[in-house]
Image (cartoon, rainbow, N blue to C red; front, side):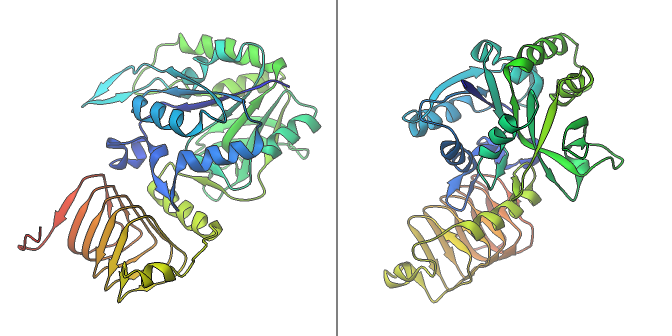
Amino acid sequence: MSLKLICPIAGVGHRLQPFTYSKPKAFLKLAGKRLIDHILVKLKRTFPKGTEIVFIVGYKKRQITEYINNHYSDYFNLEFIEQKPLGFLADTPFFSGLGDAILLAKDFVKNDDCFIFLSDRLPMEDYSSVLLTYHQGNCDAVINIKKVDNPQFYGVTVVDEEINLTGIVEKPQEFISDYAVSGAYLFGKRSVSRLFELLEEQSKVKITNGNEHQLTPIIESLIKEGVPFKGNVMRSEVLDFGRPESLLDGNRYLLSETKLKDPLFESLFQTGNIIDSKLIPPVFIGENVKIKNSIIGPNVSIGDDLVLEKCILSESVIGDGVFLRKIISSNSIIGDYSILEDLIKKNITIGDSSYITTSKMKSF
């Protein structure tokens, strides 16, 4: 079968501000890789070389296009289509939604099967189970689903005993099911043309009060029209990087899965880059990192080119190029090129290039 891949990656990632002021959310780095790398590595495991992918880009489009071209054009056939913003709020663009982003891929897909994956969800197993469910099931479309504890944050599917979809609701306020849509959809040839017809109709409806043209109501219409949809139940975790809390959960999980050649970082102790410090695994440490008089871990992802002095850090994600001195913190996300001194605080969430110091001393 000829299968075309679509990745809508135009949005701003409001729930992850302030990090997304300076970079796309798929560029946040956990356990040594950007989110987009974690996802594309899994896609490589599932799909053959030469598979065609279109990225629907918008916010930070140049950053995304250059990065993906540089790192993945040797494996995938890449295309990029721009989703134009509806307008701007204080320099930040806003877009008309996931439905309209997917509609832009209409000519790219033509009448092939298409596989849509989102850039803020990472299944810990690869995507091959979706293909298997499609080929084994009596269905025209498959949606990845996963049981979750807080269905009110997600699109939720209602399924029968054989995991056929009978309904789908976006962020239900009342409990209808705990099977959340988890970031991947496969539409077979028989359903693709109708999918794009409905997306086209929806795109003509005027958007009011900050609403968006979503994908969920289109799937709901397809189900009502009798298109057979199957749920593909994910057995292992699906990490959600849409919100700071879930990002830290995802970090914890990725660290537990990461196999390090030198898990105790003995080589870094020997080279003198880690002095008088204790590391409590799992910890990921990037390139060119100096750590002094500190206790780091568990569950800390550290980027490249950093200096940490007199810090106690756990359950946190620290970006590239950061300087931290006398910081005691947990459950924090610290953006790239930030400088923090003299701070005892949990749940710090600061964007790239921030400068926070509570002391009078100017140390550099």
